[in-house]
Length: 319
Ligand code: HEM
Image 1 (tube, rainbow, N blue to C red):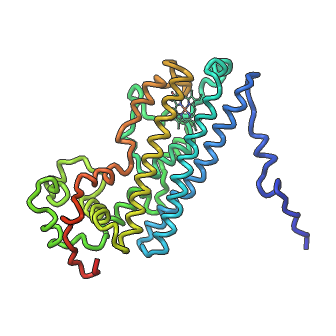
Image 2 (cartoon, helix red, strand yellow; image 1 turned 90 degrees about the vertical axis):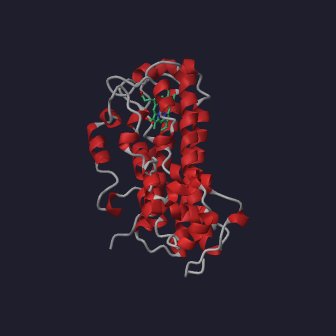
Image 3 (cartoon, rainbow, N blue to C red; image 1 turned 90 degrees about the horizontal axis):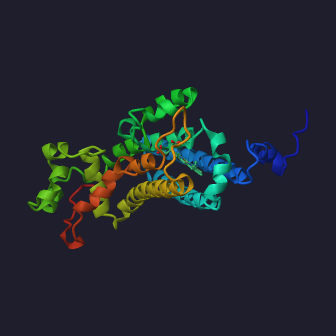
């Protein structure tokens, strides 16, 4: 039998081909940095997709024991850290003076980060809906993508995996199974004739709101927040906190990118496709709540009352 080739640092990590992937198309010194920073982002995006997708599958399997929740927490924590880290990459890129960028920006026409397949996958996998996205001149963002990538995105997340549900989709099902949701005595006491809770407990009031999740899932989320100190709710509480952390990290990503773009290109148009977006103005419009995947979880704080006003649950699970 042929002997297995000896593993080396380079052969395992494919360093040689990796370092051959930087091919500047101009003589400008800073184009090298521009390429490295983008590639570093894409590598981290790959890791984020890997972890978010695995968490999605952990939730989809509906066997929500502590081992599963513990794994999900570990991976979500990592996703949050990676997203926080990549924001720092923008600051490294900002060491390139805008005048140096002018030296090679024209060469980039036709290509834009707008076409980053992995970033779009992250958005879709988490649960950002296409019809809620910012359009530019009534054009769908997918029309600016490479046609093959557009095809991939249209089918993403894959129907074979988790029924094509997004992370928000599987979390929604999980929240709706929170023990205690059907404890009508608890809700009756907590409501105390206060109207603010109506959207969560009254079907018709819920329907008039613009919620992302089912009413039952919202009830589950509120129960977890109210009973976060109880051992059975500590892990679920950590999970909903981490989901909000992901949203916050992505919003910080957006805002840091927006300010960097403003500094780099002022009011110039973007470079994507035959015609880029308005650039800074387009990006500013994307900084809105439709891009917050777990907005409903943030809104649950509206319904929190002081601990002494939280009644005991009578649920048979003993919670
Ligand atoms: C000098 C640096 C950069 C400039 C001037 C810049 C500029 C822009 C502009 C103008 C857009 C709007 C789309 C268009 O018309 O092209 C955009 C979108 C985008 N950029 Fe950048 N960018 C820079 C660096 C980066 C880096 C390092 C990344 C990391 C991968 C990135 C990721 C994105 C993404 C994902 C979008 C799409 C955002 C959305 O549609 O919500 N950009 N960029």
